[in-house]
Structures are given as C-alpha cells and as structure tokens.
Length: 305
Image (cartoon, rainbow, N blue to C red; front, side, top):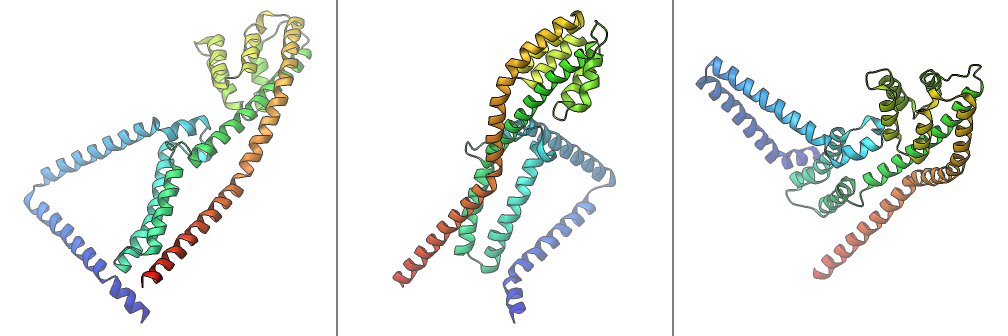
C-alpha cells in the first residue's frame, strides 16, 4: 500500500521525465535528419572548443579567487585548491538541497515546514562556508592552519641555526662551503624541505646564490630568517670563528623569540582542537532554536484553529 502511495506521488515526476526524454530524442532525430555529416562534425568541433574555453576560463578564475588565496597560504591542505574546494562545496550543498528540499517538494507537492526549515539551515551553512564571508568557518580554519604552519616553520628555522653552528664547529678546514652545508642538512627538515630544495636548485642555476637566498627569505618571511640569511650570504667569505660568533649571537636572540612562538603555537593547537567542541555546541544551539520555532509555529496553528 505504501509503495502504491509513493508511486502515485511520483507519477507527475515520471510523466515529466518521460516527456523531457522523448523531446530530447525527437530533437536529436530532427537535427540528424536536417543536417549533413560535415555540418555535424563542425558543430561538434565548435562545441568542444567552447567547452574547453569555458573550462580554462573557470580554472583561471579559480586561481584568483578568495579560496585559492587562503588555501595557497595554508600550503594546500588535503590537496585542496580553489577549484576543488568550490566543486566539493557545490556537490555537498547541491546534494543537501536536492535531498532535503527538492525531493520533499516533489513528493508533497508543496513546501512543508520541514523542508522550509531545512532550506534555511542549508542557506546558513552555505553562508558560513563562503570564503568571501567575513565570519566564515572556512576563513577561521585556514587562518589557524596558516598560523600553525608558520609556528612550525619558525621552529625549524631555530633548528637550522643549531645545525649550522654544529656543522661549522665540526669543520676541520677554515674555508666554508655554504652550498654543501645546506645540502647536507636538508633531510632533517619537514616544513623547510621544499623551500630548501628550491633554494639549492636556484643556487646552482644562472640566477646565483644571492637570488636563491632572497627567494628563500621571501618564502619564509620572518625577522629571524632575515638575520640568518644575511649571515649565510657571507659565509663563504668568512673564517670559522667569525661565522660562529655571528651565528651564536643571533641564536641567543632567536631563543627569546622562539619561546614566544612556542606559546603562540600552544594556543593555536588548543584552538584547533576546540573546533569540534565549538561546532558541536553550535549545532546543539541551532537544533534548540529550530525546536523552539517549530513549537511556536505549532501553537500558533492550533490557536488559529
């Protein structure tokens, strides 16, 4: 009995689908009959070219979007870029709209209270997922990820100081080969591994060591790394004692800054770990508000009745 009721509710939808399908087939047959093979080939080529241009335009547009900028700063977590985020965003919320709004609307033939509330909740979630919204959850999470990664990079710059000092102290010769020293230390890093790889690659190119170090400084972008790069640029022309004296002096200054970075990293970690708790509280409050609205609506309907 229930299956028959559902089938009866879907009858209008089935009729529309059949009519649309037959209309598409009729259009294809008419087009095939009225056009030549050469015309159809030209049309397919133009259509393929138009789709390719639209695709390239979409990709280029996504590279300059707010989401792409935030994800680039966060080093593309989970392999997401701007285009992938918007595709995932559209797929999830498209499914929610179809499942909770359109399907109940087709089955019931009118907007029910449940689908109305579901639509409002989905719109609120969409709003808080947009990168362009100032109070977006996406922006909040990306900001925390960027801060966390910056704290990790600063800790590895601190380790770079230590490794440089230890490496120079163990040298038995007076002359320092900066390129070989940096290359030998690269495997010890995680967050600095890719910047160091690009540094060494540019170092051996036509651009030279100064350009490579300047690019590395721009990528790291911190006061501590700026002081370190200033010394590294002149390491090849320094003797061991002078290099050690300068590195140790900056190392002491960096220790104080690193303590503050550690405190900030701890705060960021706690904020990230508290996100699930905050989201849970938000959902509980939202559920409570929906319950109140539903109860008030029901009481008003009974009063009017």
